[in-house]
Length: 404
Ligand code: PYC
Image 1: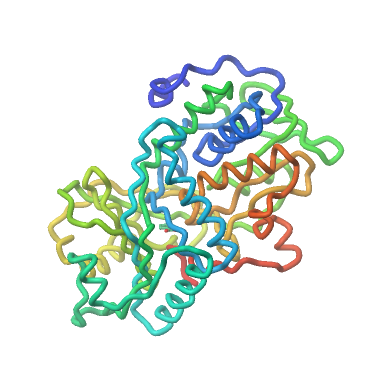
Image 2: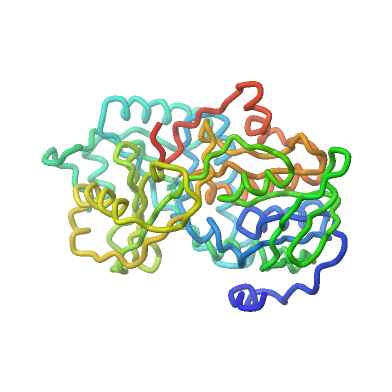
Protein backbone atom coordinates (compact mmCIF):
# COMPACT_ATOMS: atom_id res chain seq x y z
CA UNK A 1 0.00 0.00 0.00
CA UNK A 2 2.94 2.36 -0.24
CA UNK A 3 1.39 5.73 -1.06
CA UNK A 4 -2.14 4.45 -0.53
CA UNK A 5 -2.72 6.78 2.41
CA UNK A 6 -6.49 6.45 2.56
CA UNK A 7 -6.10 2.71 3.02
CA UNK A 8 -3.32 3.10 5.57
CA UNK A 9 -5.54 5.24 7.78
CA UNK A 10 -8.21 2.57 7.89
CA UNK A 11 -6.41 -0.78 8.28
CA UNK A 12 -2.98 -2.32 8.63
CA UNK A 13 -1.06 -3.09 5.48
CA UNK A 14 -1.30 -6.55 3.98
CA UNK A 15 1.80 -8.74 4.24
CA UNK A 16 3.54 -10.34 1.25
CA UNK A 17 1.41 -12.38 -1.10
CA UNK A 18 0.83 -15.95 0.00
CA UNK A 19 1.25 -18.75 -2.58
CA UNK A 20 -2.40 -19.88 -2.24
CA UNK A 21 -5.78 -18.39 -1.35
CA UNK A 22 -9.25 -19.88 -1.27
CA UNK A 23 -10.52 -16.93 -3.31
CA UNK A 24 -8.68 -14.36 -5.41
CA UNK A 25 -10.70 -11.27 -6.32
CA UNK A 26 -9.33 -9.16 -9.18
CA UNK A 27 -10.28 -5.53 -8.59
CA UNK A 28 -10.15 -3.57 -5.31
CA UNK A 29 -13.04 -1.26 -6.20
CA UNK A 30 -16.39 -1.12 -4.43
CA UNK A 31 -17.72 -4.35 -5.96
CA UNK A 32 -14.61 -6.47 -5.35
CA UNK A 33 -14.22 -5.22 -1.77
CA UNK A 34 -17.92 -5.72 -1.04
CA UNK A 35 -17.74 -9.31 -2.34
CA UNK A 36 -14.73 -9.95 -0.09
CA UNK A 37 -16.55 -8.47 2.91
CA UNK A 38 -19.69 -10.58 2.38
CA UNK A 39 -17.64 -13.75 1.69
CA UNK A 40 -15.94 -13.21 5.06
CA UNK A 41 -18.97 -12.16 7.09
CA UNK A 42 -21.78 -14.21 5.51
CA UNK A 43 -19.92 -17.35 4.41
CA UNK A 44 -16.92 -17.58 6.78
CA UNK A 45 -14.43 -17.55 3.87
CA UNK A 46 -11.54 -15.32 4.93
CA UNK A 47 -8.49 -16.71 3.09
CA UNK A 48 -9.02 -14.14 0.35
CA UNK A 49 -6.70 -11.84 -1.62
CA UNK A 50 -8.17 -8.77 -3.32
CA UNK A 51 -5.74 -7.59 -6.00
CA UNK A 52 -5.62 -4.29 -7.85
CA UNK A 53 -3.18 -3.03 -10.44
CA UNK A 54 -3.68 0.53 -9.15
CA UNK A 55 -4.74 1.86 -5.79
CA UNK A 56 -7.75 1.19 -3.55
CA UNK A 57 -10.99 2.16 -5.33
CA UNK A 58 -9.22 4.30 -7.93
CA UNK A 59 -11.30 3.18 -10.92
CA UNK A 60 -14.99 3.72 -11.49
CA UNK A 61 -15.66 3.73 -7.72
CA UNK A 62 -13.87 7.10 -7.67
CA UNK A 63 -15.37 8.34 -10.94
CA UNK A 64 -19.14 7.97 -10.70
CA UNK A 65 -21.74 10.56 -9.69
CA UNK A 66 -22.91 8.58 -6.61
CA UNK A 67 -26.59 8.24 -7.49
CA UNK A 68 -28.56 5.44 -5.82
CA UNK A 69 -32.09 4.54 -6.96
CA UNK A 70 -34.33 1.56 -7.70
CA UNK A 71 -36.68 3.09 -10.29
CA UNK A 72 -35.70 0.86 -13.20
CA UNK A 73 -38.03 -0.40 -15.92
CA UNK A 74 -37.63 -4.17 -15.97
CA UNK A 75 -38.95 -6.24 -13.04
CA UNK A 76 -35.52 -7.93 -12.93
CA UNK A 77 -33.72 -4.59 -12.64
CA UNK A 78 -36.17 -3.18 -10.08
CA UNK A 79 -35.90 -6.27 -7.83
CA UNK A 80 -32.09 -6.15 -7.99
CA UNK A 81 -31.74 -2.43 -7.21
CA UNK A 82 -34.47 -2.54 -4.57
CA UNK A 83 -32.31 -4.97 -2.61
CA UNK A 84 -29.36 -2.62 -3.07
CA UNK A 85 -31.30 0.37 -1.72
CA UNK A 86 -32.36 -1.72 1.30
CA UNK A 87 -28.71 -2.61 1.97
CA UNK A 88 -27.55 1.00 1.53
CA UNK A 89 -29.94 2.15 4.25
CA UNK A 90 -28.08 0.25 6.97
CA UNK A 91 -24.58 0.38 5.50
CA UNK A 92 -23.16 3.06 7.80
CA UNK A 93 -24.06 0.91 10.81
CA UNK A 94 -22.94 -2.33 9.18
CA UNK A 95 -19.53 -0.95 8.13
CA UNK A 96 -19.11 1.40 11.11
CA UNK A 97 -18.24 4.33 8.85
CA UNK A 98 -20.41 7.23 7.74
CA UNK A 99 -21.15 6.56 4.06
CA UNK A 100 -23.28 9.76 4.06
CA UNK A 101 -26.27 8.03 2.51
CA UNK A 102 -28.93 10.73 2.07
CA UNK A 103 -32.32 10.21 0.45
CA UNK A 104 -33.00 13.30 -1.66
CA UNK A 105 -35.79 12.38 -4.07
CA UNK A 106 -34.99 11.67 -7.74
CA UNK A 107 -36.66 13.17 -10.81
CA UNK A 108 -36.45 11.72 -14.30
CA UNK A 109 -37.73 14.63 -16.36
CA UNK A 110 -39.82 14.08 -19.48
CA UNK A 111 -39.84 16.55 -22.36
CA UNK A 112 -41.69 14.46 -24.97
CA UNK A 113 -44.82 12.29 -25.17
CA UNK A 114 -42.61 9.21 -25.57
CA UNK A 115 -40.68 10.05 -22.39
CA UNK A 116 -43.99 10.59 -20.51
CA UNK A 117 -45.15 7.12 -21.65
CA UNK A 118 -41.92 5.53 -20.43
CA UNK A 119 -42.26 7.39 -17.11
CA UNK A 120 -45.79 5.98 -16.66
CA UNK A 121 -44.59 2.49 -17.55
CA UNK A 122 -41.71 2.71 -15.06
CA UNK A 123 -44.01 4.07 -12.33
CA UNK A 124 -46.41 1.13 -12.72
CA UNK A 125 -43.63 -1.49 -12.70
CA UNK A 126 -42.03 0.22 -9.69
CA UNK A 127 -45.27 0.36 -7.68
CA UNK A 128 -46.04 -3.26 -8.52
CA UNK A 129 -42.62 -4.22 -7.14
CA UNK A 130 -43.05 -2.15 -3.95
CA UNK A 131 -40.80 0.73 -5.04
CA UNK A 132 -42.10 4.27 -4.49
CA UNK A 133 -42.39 6.13 -7.84
CA UNK A 134 -45.08 8.26 -9.42
CA UNK A 135 -45.60 10.48 -12.43
CA UNK A 136 -46.07 14.16 -11.57
CA UNK A 137 -46.69 17.31 -13.62
CA UNK A 138 -44.54 20.47 -13.96
CA UNK A 139 -46.32 22.25 -11.08
CA UNK A 140 -45.41 19.48 -8.66
CA UNK A 141 -41.86 19.36 -10.03
CA UNK A 142 -41.55 23.09 -9.26
CA UNK A 143 -43.17 22.72 -5.83
CA UNK A 144 -40.72 20.02 -4.76
CA UNK A 145 -37.68 21.53 -6.51
CA UNK A 146 -38.09 25.34 -6.50
CA UNK A 147 -34.82 26.10 -8.32
CA UNK A 148 -35.81 24.28 -11.54
CA UNK A 149 -37.06 26.21 -14.56
CA UNK A 150 -40.42 24.78 -15.69
CA UNK A 151 -41.30 27.62 -18.09
CA UNK A 152 -42.26 26.98 -21.73
CA UNK A 153 -39.72 29.50 -22.87
CA UNK A 154 -36.92 26.93 -23.41
CA UNK A 155 -35.91 24.52 -26.17
CA UNK A 156 -37.33 21.49 -24.33
CA UNK A 157 -40.07 22.40 -21.81
CA UNK A 158 -40.69 19.95 -18.95
CA UNK A 159 -43.93 18.00 -19.52
CA UNK A 160 -43.68 16.03 -16.29
CA UNK A 161 -41.40 13.69 -14.39
CA UNK A 162 -41.06 10.25 -12.86
CA UNK A 163 -40.60 11.12 -9.17
CA UNK A 164 -38.82 8.55 -6.98
CA UNK A 165 -38.66 9.75 -3.35
CA UNK A 166 -36.07 7.15 -2.18
CA UNK A 167 -33.48 8.35 -4.75
CA UNK A 168 -30.27 9.03 -2.81
CA UNK A 169 -26.59 9.88 -2.93
CA UNK A 170 -23.76 8.38 -0.87
CA UNK A 171 -20.06 9.08 -0.36
CA UNK A 172 -18.42 6.69 -2.84
CA UNK A 173 -14.95 6.43 -1.32
CA UNK A 174 -16.32 5.96 2.22
CA UNK A 175 -18.15 2.90 0.88
CA UNK A 176 -14.92 1.43 -0.47
CA UNK A 177 -12.94 2.24 2.68
CA UNK A 178 -15.72 0.80 4.83
CA UNK A 179 -15.87 -2.49 2.94
CA UNK A 180 -12.05 -2.64 2.84
CA UNK A 181 -11.52 -2.01 6.54
CA UNK A 182 -14.20 -4.48 7.63
CA UNK A 183 -13.02 -7.14 5.18
CA UNK A 184 -9.44 -6.65 6.44
CA UNK A 185 -10.67 -6.89 10.05
CA UNK A 186 -11.99 -10.36 9.18
CA UNK A 187 -8.63 -11.42 7.70
CA UNK A 188 -9.01 -10.52 4.00
CA UNK A 189 -5.77 -9.32 2.38
CA UNK A 190 -5.86 -6.32 0.03
CA UNK A 191 -2.89 -5.95 -2.32
CA UNK A 192 -2.73 -2.82 -4.46
CA UNK A 193 -0.06 -2.23 -7.15
CA UNK A 194 -0.62 -5.90 -7.98
CA UNK A 195 -1.66 -6.33 -11.59
CA UNK A 196 -2.95 -9.62 -13.00
CA UNK A 197 -1.35 -10.56 -16.32
CA UNK A 198 -2.79 -14.03 -16.83
CA UNK A 199 -5.58 -16.21 -15.46
CA UNK A 200 -4.42 -19.79 -15.05
CA UNK A 201 -6.84 -22.39 -16.38
CA UNK A 202 -6.34 -26.15 -16.22
CA UNK A 203 -8.83 -28.61 -17.71
CA UNK A 204 -11.54 -25.95 -17.99
CA UNK A 205 -11.20 -24.71 -14.43
CA UNK A 206 -9.53 -21.60 -13.00
CA UNK A 207 -6.66 -22.48 -10.66
CA UNK A 208 -4.89 -19.17 -10.08
CA UNK A 209 -3.51 -15.94 -11.47
CA UNK A 210 -0.13 -14.71 -12.60
CA UNK A 211 0.64 -11.24 -11.26
CA UNK A 212 3.49 -8.72 -11.53
CA UNK A 213 4.49 -10.00 -8.06
CA UNK A 214 4.41 -13.71 -8.86
CA UNK A 215 1.98 -16.58 -9.34
CA UNK A 216 -0.88 -17.21 -6.90
CA UNK A 217 -2.93 -20.40 -6.72
CA UNK A 218 -6.62 -19.91 -6.03
CA UNK A 219 -9.57 -22.16 -5.31
CA UNK A 220 -11.86 -19.62 -7.00
CA UNK A 221 -11.28 -16.45 -8.99
CA UNK A 222 -13.70 -13.53 -9.28
CA UNK A 223 -13.18 -10.60 -11.63
CA UNK A 224 -14.75 -7.29 -10.59
CA UNK A 225 -12.96 -4.75 -12.77
CA UNK A 226 -15.53 -2.37 -14.26
CA UNK A 227 -13.96 -0.52 -17.17
CA UNK A 228 -11.49 -3.33 -17.89
CA UNK A 229 -13.92 -6.27 -17.93
CA UNK A 230 -13.21 -7.40 -21.49
CA UNK A 231 -9.45 -7.14 -21.03
CA UNK A 232 -9.44 -9.31 -17.89
CA UNK A 233 -12.04 -11.80 -19.17
CA UNK A 234 -9.91 -12.17 -22.27
CA UNK A 235 -7.09 -13.44 -20.04
CA UNK A 236 -9.39 -16.35 -19.25
CA UNK A 237 -10.23 -16.83 -22.93
CA UNK A 238 -13.72 -15.29 -22.62
CA UNK A 239 -15.02 -12.81 -25.19
CA UNK A 240 -17.63 -10.56 -23.56
CA UNK A 241 -20.47 -8.77 -25.39
CA UNK A 242 -19.23 -5.44 -24.04
CA UNK A 243 -18.06 -2.16 -25.57
CA UNK A 244 -16.07 0.16 -23.34
CA UNK A 245 -16.95 3.84 -23.70
CA UNK A 246 -15.89 6.91 -21.68
CA UNK A 247 -18.52 8.50 -19.44
CA UNK A 248 -17.63 12.04 -18.44
CA UNK A 249 -18.63 14.08 -15.41
CA UNK A 250 -17.70 17.31 -13.64
CA UNK A 251 -18.31 19.32 -10.47
CA UNK A 252 -18.81 23.03 -9.93
CA UNK A 253 -17.19 25.10 -7.23
CA UNK A 254 -18.98 24.51 -3.87
CA UNK A 255 -21.90 26.73 -2.91
CA UNK A 256 -24.33 26.66 0.00
CA UNK A 257 -27.27 24.21 -0.21
CA UNK A 258 -29.53 25.16 -3.12
CA UNK A 259 -30.53 21.84 -4.73
CA UNK A 260 -31.86 19.05 -2.52
CA UNK A 261 -33.03 16.65 -5.22
CA UNK A 262 -31.31 14.58 -7.88
CA UNK A 263 -32.50 15.71 -11.31
CA UNK A 264 -32.04 13.61 -14.43
CA UNK A 265 -33.23 14.22 -17.95
CA UNK A 266 -33.09 11.08 -20.05
CA UNK A 267 -33.99 12.99 -23.20
CA UNK A 268 -31.42 15.75 -22.69
CA UNK A 269 -28.83 13.30 -21.30
CA UNK A 270 -27.94 15.34 -18.22
CA UNK A 271 -28.09 14.76 -14.47
CA UNK A 272 -27.23 16.87 -11.43
CA UNK A 273 -27.20 16.70 -7.65
CA UNK A 274 -25.49 18.77 -4.96
CA UNK A 275 -22.91 16.97 -2.84
CA UNK A 276 -22.67 17.33 0.93
CA UNK A 277 -19.78 19.77 0.50
CA UNK A 278 -21.78 21.97 -1.87
CA UNK A 279 -20.42 21.04 -5.31
CA UNK A 280 -22.89 20.55 -8.15
CA UNK A 281 -22.13 17.03 -9.40
CA UNK A 282 -23.06 16.74 -13.08
CA UNK A 283 -22.78 14.32 -15.95
CA UNK A 284 -24.03 13.59 -19.41
CA UNK A 285 -24.32 10.73 -21.88
CA UNK A 286 -21.58 8.27 -22.70
CA UNK A 287 -19.25 9.50 -25.44
CA UNK A 288 -20.23 8.64 -28.99
CA UNK A 289 -17.46 6.09 -29.55
CA UNK A 290 -15.59 3.31 -27.78
CA UNK A 291 -12.23 4.31 -26.26
CA UNK A 292 -9.98 3.34 -23.35
CA UNK A 293 -9.16 6.85 -22.11
CA UNK A 294 -10.13 8.93 -19.09
CA UNK A 295 -9.50 12.24 -20.86
CA UNK A 296 -12.06 15.07 -20.58
CA UNK A 297 -13.42 17.05 -23.54
CA UNK A 298 -14.70 20.59 -24.07
CA UNK A 299 -17.39 19.14 -26.31
CA UNK A 300 -18.93 17.26 -23.36
CA UNK A 301 -18.91 20.34 -21.14
CA UNK A 302 -20.48 22.58 -23.78
CA UNK A 303 -23.42 20.28 -24.55
CA UNK A 304 -23.98 19.53 -20.83
CA UNK A 305 -24.04 23.21 -19.89
CA UNK A 306 -26.34 24.20 -22.75
CA UNK A 307 -29.10 22.04 -21.23
CA UNK A 308 -28.12 22.66 -17.61
CA UNK A 309 -28.50 26.44 -17.97
CA UNK A 310 -32.03 26.04 -19.32
CA UNK A 311 -33.01 23.73 -16.45
CA UNK A 312 -31.16 25.69 -13.76
CA UNK A 313 -30.45 29.31 -14.78
CA UNK A 314 -28.57 29.90 -11.47
CA UNK A 315 -25.82 27.64 -12.84
CA UNK A 316 -24.72 30.58 -15.00
CA UNK A 317 -23.05 32.00 -11.86
CA UNK A 318 -20.95 28.89 -11.17
CA UNK A 319 -17.51 27.85 -12.33
CA UNK A 320 -16.59 24.28 -13.19
CA UNK A 321 -14.01 23.04 -10.68
CA UNK A 322 -13.04 19.55 -11.87
CA UNK A 323 -13.81 17.36 -14.89
CA UNK A 324 -13.04 13.66 -15.35
CA UNK A 325 -14.14 10.45 -17.06
CA UNK A 326 -14.79 6.84 -16.09
CA UNK A 327 -14.83 3.79 -18.33
CA UNK A 328 -18.32 2.37 -18.93
CA UNK A 329 -18.52 -1.31 -19.95
CA UNK A 330 -21.70 -1.20 -22.05
CA UNK A 331 -23.73 -4.34 -22.69
CA UNK A 332 -26.22 -4.61 -25.58
CA UNK A 333 -29.22 -4.71 -23.21
CA UNK A 334 -27.98 -2.13 -20.63
CA UNK A 335 -27.98 -4.73 -17.83
CA UNK A 336 -25.00 -6.17 -15.95
CA UNK A 337 -23.32 -9.55 -16.45
CA UNK A 338 -23.00 -11.45 -13.19
CA UNK A 339 -22.29 -14.90 -11.88
CA UNK A 340 -21.05 -18.18 -13.30
CA UNK A 341 -19.00 -18.48 -16.49
CA UNK A 342 -18.24 -21.45 -18.77
CA UNK A 343 -14.98 -21.79 -16.81
CA UNK A 344 -15.36 -23.68 -13.58
CA UNK A 345 -14.38 -21.65 -10.49
CA UNK A 346 -14.16 -18.43 -12.53
CA UNK A 347 -16.84 -15.86 -11.72
CA UNK A 348 -17.66 -12.55 -13.32
CA UNK A 349 -19.07 -9.25 -12.08
CA UNK A 350 -19.10 -7.03 -15.17
CA UNK A 351 -21.10 -5.01 -17.69
CA UNK A 352 -21.59 -2.17 -15.24
CA UNK A 353 -22.05 0.47 -17.93
CA UNK A 354 -23.47 3.58 -16.30
CA UNK A 355 -25.24 1.74 -13.46
CA UNK A 356 -22.56 0.18 -11.22
CA UNK A 357 -22.12 2.35 -8.12
CA UNK A 358 -25.68 1.95 -6.92
CA UNK A 359 -25.31 -1.84 -7.17
CA UNK A 360 -22.23 -2.04 -4.93
CA UNK A 361 -23.86 -3.66 -1.85
CA UNK A 362 -26.18 -6.05 -3.72
CA UNK A 363 -23.55 -7.15 -6.21
CA UNK A 364 -21.12 -7.79 -3.35
CA UNK A 365 -23.69 -9.75 -1.37
CA UNK A 366 -24.94 -11.85 -4.28
CA UNK A 367 -21.57 -12.43 -5.94
CA UNK A 368 -20.25 -13.61 -2.57
CA UNK A 369 -23.17 -16.08 -2.45
CA UNK A 370 -22.40 -17.19 -6.00
CA UNK A 371 -18.68 -17.72 -5.31
CA UNK A 372 -19.30 -19.44 -1.97
CA UNK A 373 -21.98 -21.85 -3.21
CA UNK A 374 -20.94 -22.26 -6.84
CA UNK A 375 -24.57 -21.61 -7.81
CA UNK A 376 -26.23 -18.65 -9.55
CA UNK A 377 -28.40 -16.86 -6.93
CA UNK A 378 -32.04 -16.37 -8.01
CA UNK A 379 -31.67 -12.56 -8.07
CA UNK A 380 -28.76 -12.89 -10.52
CA UNK A 381 -30.31 -15.50 -12.84
CA UNK A 382 -31.58 -12.87 -15.35
CA UNK A 383 -28.08 -11.35 -15.52
CA UNK A 384 -26.15 -14.52 -16.34
CA UNK A 385 -23.57 -14.38 -19.15
CA UNK A 386 -25.31 -17.18 -21.08
CA UNK A 387 -28.37 -14.94 -21.74
CA UNK A 388 -26.55 -13.60 -24.79
CA UNK A 389 -26.37 -17.14 -26.24
CA UNK A 390 -30.09 -17.77 -25.69
CA UNK A 391 -31.13 -14.18 -26.67
CA UNK A 392 -32.86 -13.85 -23.31
CA UNK A 393 -31.94 -10.20 -22.87
CA UNK A 394 -33.04 -7.82 -20.07
CA UNK A 395 -33.64 -4.61 -22.08
CA UNK A 396 -33.20 -1.99 -19.37
CA UNK A 397 -34.55 1.34 -20.60
CA UNK A 398 -34.32 2.72 -17.06
CA UNK A 399 -30.52 2.90 -17.43
CA UNK A 400 -29.25 6.49 -17.32
CA UNK A 401 -26.81 8.40 -19.56
CA UNK A 402 -27.40 6.22 -22.58
CA UNK A 403 -29.41 6.73 -25.78
CA UNK A 404 -32.16 4.13 -25.99
O1 PYC B 1 -28.02 5.24 -13.18
O2 PYC B 1 -28.73 6.97 -12.09
C1 PYC B 1 -27.93 6.44 -12.84
C2 PYC B 1 -26.80 7.21 -13.38
C3 PYC B 1 -26.60 8.54 -13.28
C4 PYC B 1 -25.41 8.79 -13.91
C5 PYC B 1 -24.92 7.64 -14.40
N1 PYC B 1 -25.79 6.67 -14.06
